[in-house]
Length: 443
Image (tube, rainbow, N blue to C red; front, side, top):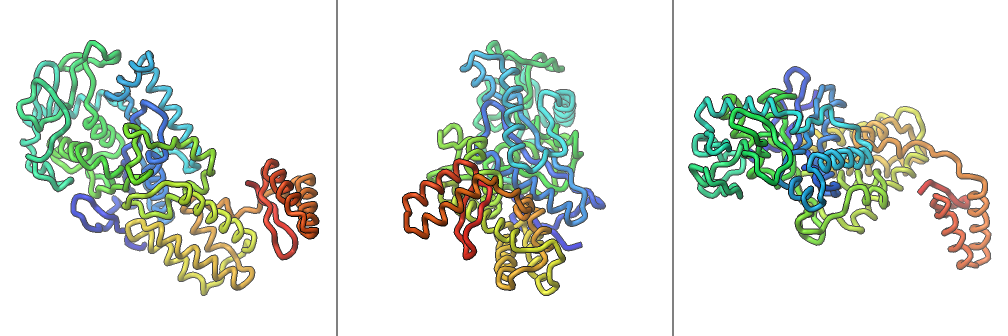
């Protein structure tokens, strides 16, 4: 089996993946469900779903856990603004998130724990932190003592004194400390009982407990957006290290942010493109291909130009599917297939892997028609193999419109030809001129 190396934020270096036998645990931070997710939220879902698919190809047994944060300050704020119960809003947005990400066609994670269903594990971890001297109760809150953890700051590479948590609490012993448990407030309509009184968990402890419940500690990969390195992931790592005497994860893998107009896409900024609208406009194949065209660690621009380029790539792959046969590919094209998988093994470099795909397609086109087994194997890892499947024949009335369009073009009646093209598009097909006449493909 080839060695797989991934960039580790903590060490700043590529580190070899060390599975437990063949098992690989992956925890990726999911959404806080106070509204519909945007295309930027979809990036980690795509990255870690495709990573799981690649690891399976390599003979490993990955388990992907993507949590859903359904207890959070943002949910209370959004619910109050909408005049709705917070639990009702969170449940509705959880279902919307699942429906929106189903549209990506990547399958579901192996586990999708809810914070609201992990309270027992959260309370247990907080209790362990108190017993070990790393947390303290004050006024119904429980706070983590940041300076009690000598390793704090190792993930985000910051000095402890430069780490403002962005939290205010009257009971803090140190301004750097952060909340593990928050006492119930009068304007919060959900709460849970605990040894410290009614309240709710803090955001960071939720993920530590959910990850441990499904993967244990010292699992292989913890992932998420680069905006989570501090404070969220730094605090997750500290909680588990202090409470369990072990590291939470071996490799911390972070994807870059999606940008719109040069800024990070965020609801607070208002520069968002809802995922369901993007999928409706461009289709899931173009969305997945666009994500694969950028290295996961780098910021990625989202624009019409990017999506138009991805759409052209989808059509190029569909065209390749029409040219290749169902037979085995020529042996002399194996180096290109191998280059694809070697790129993925080298820090999951999807743009370099796609370079091998395009080179394979160019060579196959030059030869006329070849067996497509290599191409199907490569695209299956990216969930794009369906582009190689022959579509159903266009309806007779659409074929008749296409033939009429050929005649109009021959008569140089281009206005009529354009009108016929629009009719064909309305019927759900794209017409392309070929040396033999025309070709129809579903739009």
